[in-house]
Length: 165
Ligand code: RB5
Image 1 (cartoon, rainbow, N blue to C red):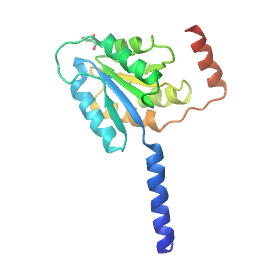
Image 2 (image 1 turned 120 degrees about the vertical axis):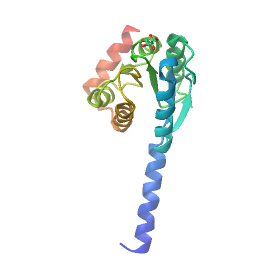
Image 3 (image 1 turned 30 degrees about the vertical axis):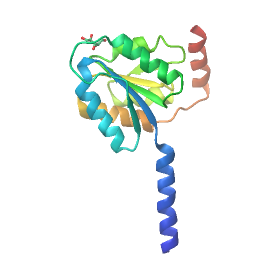
């Protein structure tokens, strides 16, 4: 490769990285302040922009409010997707799923994380700070962000879900 071709390749890689950058809205309750911090740092290192809607202390708080706030923000297009963390990931995702247009999926493993993007085009993933460790949580987030929606028959099924709303 010539010097020129080299620098063009590097430039293309930089453009691609820029295109892949996402704005991610994150929310958590008191059970997940520490995990949220680590996930935020990880996402920032990957080059994404992260907006924090969660709490930063261990003082008890109500997860429905945070799930709803992140749900409304994602539904309004204030971010490309959302991440929610509570003790189990369940309560906070149930709250987010009450918002029209939200498909929040609880993931405790990477296979689920991949499939909820490929098949359900989940716009929020959730997990439990009391259920998964930090390394598993990072893997779940990375696999979800890297996966692509497959469209086709899955689009029809997603439309059917939203007709229920
Ligand atoms: C808080 O104690 C806990 O109930 C909450 O984090 C979550 O697990 C609810 O689904």
